Image (cartoon, rainbow, N blue to C red; front, side):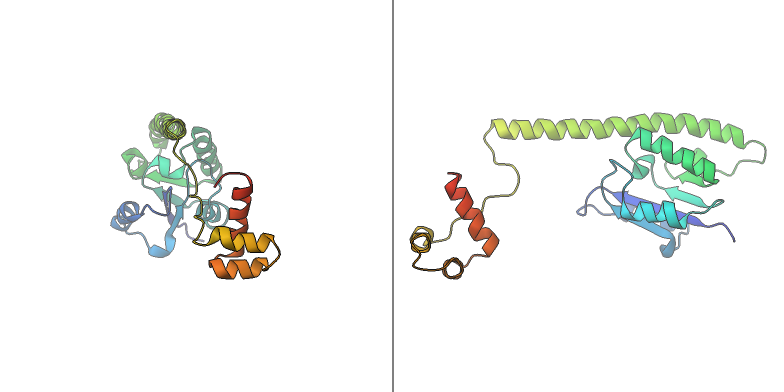
Length: 204
């Protein structure tokens, strides 16, 4: 079976787009069918697209192209593990932002290419992991600052609708059912009981 070239693109959230990476692949002549994408964090390797690529599509002799090393992962240990896997399987990794990986070296000099690539990948892997740790630290500091300032984090609390006190009083007195109370207030069951719990806890 002839070897194939696959392309992998990743962004961390669904709000981000893959355009820059996809355009780089198209300039290399990538077939859309051979491009695998994920919109998930690079904190680990458990991503739907990547697992399908690694475990099902890639075969010995194939080539995997990514835009930059941190698209593979932001964890240095994971990067090392995946590179060792590719090496064992005879899969070549090309990194567009790392030109030495894109070059086809003369036969017999591949060891020079591999040596240079290993040094660069080690450095870039450290940088990618440091960036991830910095992002996490900034997020933690932002959360701490928000809590200190008394800001509410997470989902906003549901507002009690007009007539809440009167309708829930009738419900608690047994004059109307919970379903009738929900209908009068225009609330879903989950929202109704959420507000009831918050009221009981003194959170509203």
